[in-house]
Image (cartoon, rainbow, N blue to C red; front, side, top):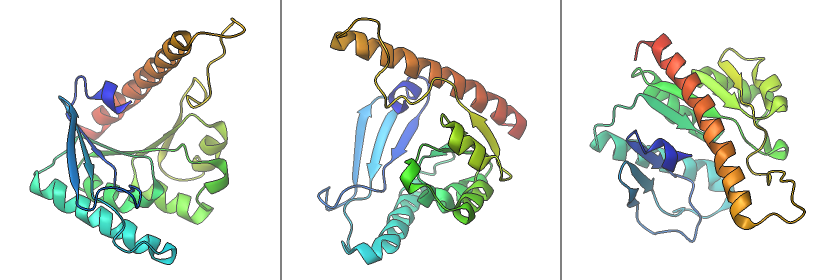
Length: 194
């Protein structure tokens, strides 16, 4: 999705939740023109009970990186509830803040955490009717995307579809999802005066 978005936009993909086996020091990679990936590196304290401390450290490190770049985004898009504080900081600067709710049904945030997350973002988008219903209880603007779960292989009439057929069907579904998301974001940016 971010590769497609970076065709016409400058995108920084912040990936602050890398694996313990990742790079020791922060890493900045230019994947293609318009798309930069920033990864703050491994957990300095790889102990399960210190998970929250690690996440806060990475988010703080990410903030410092973006401050150095004098980053003034129009849109901040998160897909992890732990990044809500980061999103709220840019929301105060006038950016449109979006949470893409696609968490596993087994690892959904509690009602209290959902309320906190909904209070930290401008809008929530999800392809899941279950999550749409849960987040609609809260004050953020919530949108249900069509097209189902992109993680599931698309249904193709052939008994054994070729890999290129599956890839084309997936990319077509992804394009539809992005067009729908773009229409929502464009409308919400206009409401925010951006």
